[in-house]
Image (tube, rainbow, N blue to C red):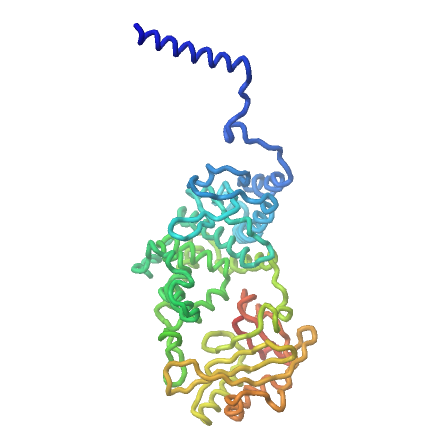
Length: 479
């Protein structure tokens, strides 16, 4: 009997409590996400409607909603509202517009993701990596780490564009799968621990660390460390790199794949480098499959899309003229020229270089390995000739510095051989053997400029000098 009375009494208390609450106050607060998270549309929302929702049926969410992040236990901060339009404008100009120019609006309407969610910070993973973007079933993409975005920073623009092309590549591949021949090119080197491939993981010596780092992906036939994670990401990383980086960037990677022994490239007795032909062949095969896939599956000429994409990047994040960036204390202070690592150097420069090389071999039994143009002092250019002893298979070689007095008039650089020459002993020793190389620069004038008309899509990769008297006589090098 007491037990029954207890139940009745408890029920009565609950009824009294609820009744009391309903009389004294009204609960009107809605749960966020269930009718309580509302706001007046503003300029950002109108811009999104005009540029994404209305033309392409794409929703862009930027208000905080943790449920959109999937892994809700991770700490991620909202995107700054002032960055929403700049970020989405860059994406439209460098991703959507190039595809529309090649394939038309219906292509984007049909295959593009239908929702973007923007977050301010990256998502930190337990394995030490960070996530910059995710895609869900080809319908939604989450972009992270946006609060540091700067439209003037070309590297940042390329990073976000790489993420977009990577995720869109997955959508294309999910609709029409790339041939299985792709994954057969490098079947043995995919690894779940791809994140262990990073600078600083290999050696305390930064030069050796860079060599070993690049050998762990480029040297194995993969375009990025992440491409080693699995066959699908390998494919979309190749596509994304070809579009975001451009053709000159890819070719520069291929042209710099050699076999190393410690810190030095292996050479034969005449100074000819030993190429990593295996890695070169693998990367070129992968590129060829990507090119064929885009053409055969989607009717897209990859070269045309590369050109449109690179033009959009340059317009969205302009780079200053090369002359304004070259000099002491500026962005670039040297140009490195190595004919074994470059293609497209002018025949007149190569003739001067090769004749000097032959003269050095015949006169002293040495050979030129590479040269650099140094702009570390005002009104001066140092021509540094790095030469080698062919009887020594490996080594750093020797430097010979030749100084030229310079004047620069709005990008027209005049060079005069400094006399007496304040060069080191090595320069005095080889000077008489390399007259053709010295004459190529002495008493000459050059336009200091980018060489995109010579090597397309090469801005910020190569910078060059073009003779004012002969536009077909030029040199360029890596920066």
